[in-house]
Image (tube, rainbow, N blue to C red):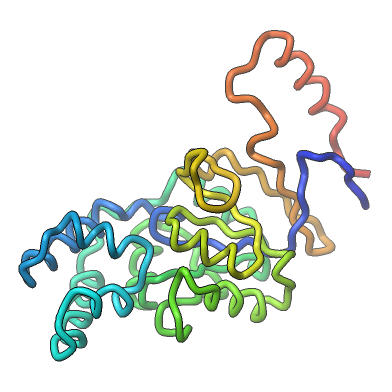
Length: 242
């Protein structure tokens, strides 16, 4: 089976970030960050700017003295575990993950495993077979470790992976790993990947041979003229693979 269309790409694995990509948790994380910033006497806006997309273990040492690091990591972890109020599935996340074979996708997150599982449950999203969390890699995003580990565990090459990310740190991680990316919620100034408003703009189809066909989210104009609608309708009817 071949497909020479320029608006179609083929992969073997979809690798998803969690917060801001599969789950809407920014309000929850912001609430936790503000509480933590108040606890340690720091400006909340500055803490949020420095922590976005990073592991607690990576940003907390930048902001508190070494003797307090482990205590503060533990405090923020416990708060994140017990408070999932406001966590919901991101638009399109349920439909997309449920359409993929279990061995064709994974979650790669800066959250700890216990936190990630609680947020997936709060959002009523399926639990992935492969979940790479903060404690599973020596370096967090923007280092490529998490995505490289996911590709190796799934038995696919880096160029066969498509990453879904919202944060610059995660997109840089995908780029460092040599993987294509979809920048969820990104604009034209995204650091890497194709920007989309949300996952509803992404169309993935799984085939029996293990390949994933992904239609380029930018291939179709968002505002179509009547003539464009007619042309697009005709093309769509003829695009089934041979």
